[in-house]
Image 1 (tube, rainbow, N blue to C red):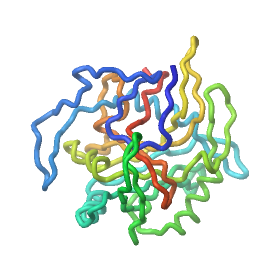
Image 2: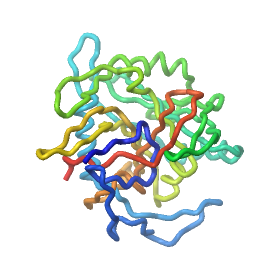
Image 3: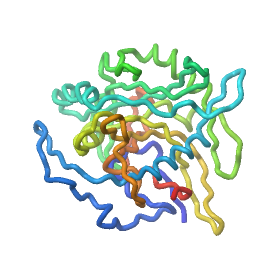
Image 4: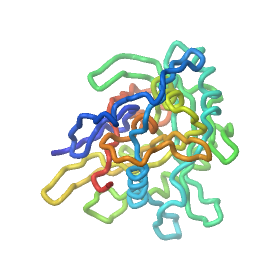
Length: 310
């Protein structure tokens, strides 16, 4: 059997099991509220149990370091010092909600990829830029809704240790995106140890997600959420089961957002589930590259639990 992921997909409630089979959720895995619904402003808030376990997420992170690496011009290929960055939940809502309230169209957030090696070790780390976009709905397809994305003027930010710092697309490309495209190395198959450089037309430099029904729900559905952590993760485009295991090809980078509680602790649990990244984590993206004016699809597919994870 074969699992083929949708290219650059947006998802909130992913229910894809390994080998391409969708399983029936157990009672523990269903959307069971932890407490009655509450109202925050005009929004309905329902606190839900996590379907993402620490063990599974840690396993996927470990897999990522074996498939996504970097190579400087005069150095050896190496895993990154960091694959994630954090931003406050209140800061995100303060940025996006006022704009969303003024728009009839949907609001989106583009996550831009970059690399930086200005730390003490000189080894590259992932960095992320955030850009607010207006998503104009242009139609429906069997795969999902069709949108055109248009950036909001002055809506480009760089995540750093102090929060969101205003920047612009030209500065981002010059300081971080060019590094990402030059240094990135991806292991495309689990049957090979070869690493390929960034490939235009295959790899992208950003993902776009919806605020309403996406990031907004991640914040609303988690009582006590303090922040959101953006993780670069590795995912195969195709996974095929064999008599001896799995053949996985077309590995690429995606991103996942994880809700953080107090002391920046991921709001994950210690159970073992067969549904990936739901309720307290958001695995997301779109077929739309950075700032494109082409129509893009947001299909309801996402990253499955990796077969090598416990």
